Image (cartoon, rainbow, N blue to C red; front, side, top):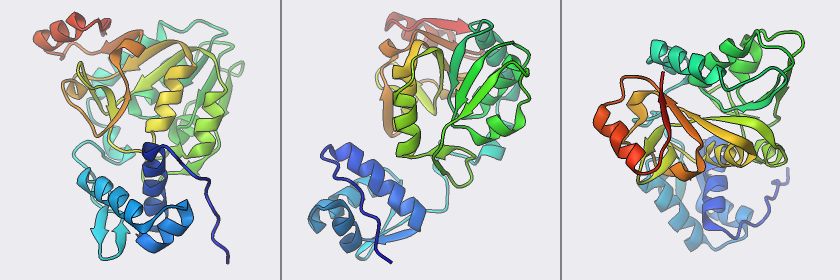
Length: 263
């Protein structure tokens, strides 16, 4: 069977994202096959894999790479995340729901905090809720007057979300009242960041789609930096976090121009 050819990606970071996606989908890849697939030299692919391995996203093998089974320090499977900082996430979600009026069009990022927000929005009328989170779309019973739009895309193993170019293309065509973003890490210097490439492009498009962008992050996410930057804090209109955020961290963020609400 002929291998499906992907388009050229002249921007290295875009190619890295798609190389990583190939490794995840196939489990293991060879340098030769990737070079043919992306129309670049084997030395270029070798450097790409070395870069991904240095970030802990793949494991290098002789002549290629494999996708590691263990999770990074930031990334846990969806079901495990569901029980972490649950009360804080509920408080954040309740505060975030006040940013939504009946009839609004909103986009919800993936993750357990976004799921808690969806529960808080369930009784509002006439919403249009757009998401790439499979768990959220399948498990929240919204008011019958609300329209739920699930993007297409590739299901990501263990994460109950859709990823890939189809998701990014869909969201890139949107303009919504409020975009609710989630994060693996937040810092004044590096901004909002994510543990891997899979959803970083999606998150960037979520930021661009919102007339207003609200970041939802519990206090454990702050003063950390995950490997892939999503956006600078200047691109976020409001950050909603919980009261567990240390005062010195709040002061530092606000001194850098961040607008915070403690739930």
